[in-house]
Length: 299
Image (cartoon, rainbow, N blue to C red):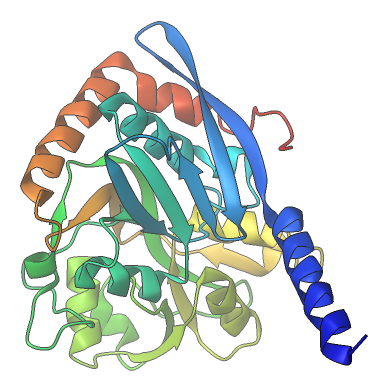
């Protein structure tokens, strides 16, 4: 028997074994209009999840790992994932959700390689696209109505004497860590685009936090819930090393950003908005948030 006749079956066997080690499934539940509903979630690969793949209407969604809101290591992938699964289940769509670094997810949505990006912050109509030259982000994406959200502002090392007094003038030229592709706040982003700060870009919030801990930046822009989670789940870090500076920039709602490359984007926007309003009135979003973390171990 030749080497090839041994080698090829071995490669095939190892490939199938790798697929089996990744492929998983779990069930998540939510309550809506006094009914408890269960959804089956399949995970064919490390970063992809599929729900109701048999339905004729399918949507592709892209997101990021951003605990405690959404993350592949959270129970049911976090409450934002559960809300999204429930939302499109009620709308009768099957969905795939893929996790990527945020800048890549933004690129995919703006180019029409994905139908929906989430969770997004509000996007100003004048916010320039980093993906398509001479274009504004709102030319490429349509926003849903808002749902829940979190604070955003500056975080520093505990021993750093910050001159920040609530004005951007007080931190002009400061070294500030920002995550590539993030929409922060309209006012901050405007100053950022003008080169008002010495901005250092990070791949994600975890890397941004490392920049701050290593004193490579003076501040980072972040949601304090995200930073608290990352510090609490890193045995090497002391949660007391980092603190949030008051006043916060603002409270940022979350949105679904629908790609305008999808021919049905306007219809999708109307349907999503109507269902979010229904969820809000029924208390479904609040219940999903309250039940976050109460799930059975995945299979």
